[in-house]
Amino acid sequence: MTDTRTGALRRTLNIARPDDVYNAIVDAHRDLTDEQCRAFDARLILLLANHVGDEDVLREALTEARRTLEDA
Image (cartoon, rainbow, N blue to C red; front, top):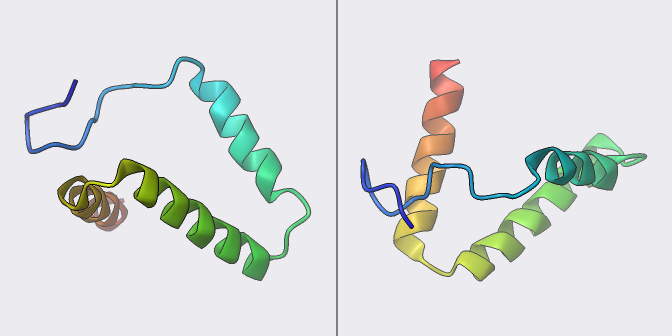
């Protein structure tokens, strides 16, 4: 299921237990330096991008993530 409002990027909640996932991400960063956190995040992003495997979806996600930073 995709949100066809703007493209192929799914924008509706698609995680059964989002709080657990959030906590797992926070826990994975525990005791890492800022540099290690950035390296971890880059590796995680590349792994997930490979899993998604759709360049159009990935580009849409990059655009949306950047837009939300600029709107903040």
